Image 1 (cartoon, rainbow, N blue to C red):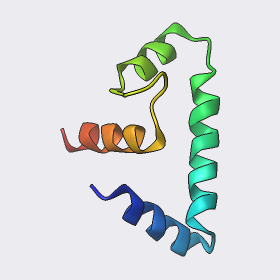
Image 2 (cartoon, helix red, strand yellow; image 1 turned 135 degrees about the horizontal axis):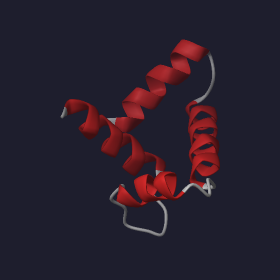
Image 3 (tube, helix red, strand yellow; image 1 turned 180 degrees about the vertical axis):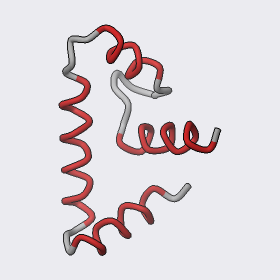
Length: 69
Protein backbone atom coordinates (compact mmCIF):
# COMPACT_ATOMS: atom_id res chain seq x y z
CA UNK A 1 0.00 0.00 0.00
CA UNK A 2 1.30 3.42 -0.93
CA UNK A 3 0.37 5.56 2.06
CA UNK A 4 1.72 8.75 0.52
CA UNK A 5 -0.38 8.22 -2.60
CA UNK A 6 -3.51 7.68 -0.52
CA UNK A 7 -2.82 10.81 1.53
CA UNK A 8 -2.29 12.78 -1.69
CA UNK A 9 -5.64 11.55 -3.02
CA UNK A 10 -7.39 12.56 0.21
CA UNK A 11 -5.77 15.99 0.07
CA UNK A 12 -6.77 16.50 -3.55
CA UNK A 13 -10.38 15.45 -2.92
CA UNK A 14 -10.63 17.84 0.03
CA UNK A 15 -8.73 20.75 -1.46
CA UNK A 16 -6.05 20.78 1.23
CA UNK A 17 -2.34 20.00 1.41
CA UNK A 18 -0.92 16.58 2.17
CA UNK A 19 0.70 18.15 5.24
CA UNK A 20 -2.73 19.21 6.49
CA UNK A 21 -4.12 15.71 5.96
CA UNK A 22 -1.18 14.27 7.90
CA UNK A 23 -1.66 16.79 10.74
CA UNK A 24 -5.38 16.08 11.03
CA UNK A 25 -4.96 12.32 11.02
CA UNK A 26 -2.08 12.51 13.48
CA UNK A 27 -4.16 14.72 15.79
CA UNK A 28 -6.98 12.14 15.70
CA UNK A 29 -4.54 9.31 16.43
CA UNK A 30 -2.97 11.25 19.31
CA UNK A 31 -6.40 11.92 20.79
CA UNK A 32 -7.37 8.26 20.48
CA UNK A 33 -4.16 7.14 22.18
CA UNK A 34 -5.03 9.28 25.23
CA UNK A 35 -7.99 7.08 26.13
CA UNK A 36 -7.75 5.63 29.64
CA UNK A 37 -9.92 2.66 28.59
CA UNK A 38 -7.82 -0.52 29.00
CA UNK A 39 -9.44 -2.10 25.93
CA UNK A 40 -8.56 0.91 23.80
CA UNK A 41 -5.01 0.91 25.14
CA UNK A 42 -4.70 -2.82 24.43
CA UNK A 43 -5.78 -2.19 20.84
CA UNK A 44 -3.22 0.59 20.34
CA UNK A 45 -0.56 -1.64 21.88
CA UNK A 46 -1.43 -4.42 19.42
CA UNK A 47 -0.33 -2.27 16.48
CA UNK A 48 3.20 -3.21 15.39
CA UNK A 49 5.61 -0.29 15.71
CA UNK A 50 9.26 0.57 15.80
CA UNK A 51 9.00 3.31 18.46
CA UNK A 52 7.05 4.07 21.61
CA UNK A 53 3.88 4.88 19.68
CA UNK A 54 2.82 3.84 16.19
CA UNK A 55 3.41 6.30 13.39
CA UNK A 56 0.71 7.42 11.01
CA UNK A 57 2.15 5.12 8.35
CA UNK A 58 2.28 2.15 10.77
CA UNK A 59 -1.36 2.69 11.77
CA UNK A 60 -2.61 3.03 8.20
CA UNK A 61 -0.63 -0.02 7.07
CA UNK A 62 -1.89 -2.07 10.03
CA UNK A 63 -5.51 -1.07 9.50
CA UNK A 64 -5.39 -1.74 5.77
CA UNK A 65 -3.95 -5.20 6.43
CA UNK A 66 -6.73 -5.87 8.96
CA UNK A 67 -9.35 -4.87 6.40
CA UNK A 68 -7.80 -7.22 3.82
CA UNK A 69 -8.18 -10.15 6.23
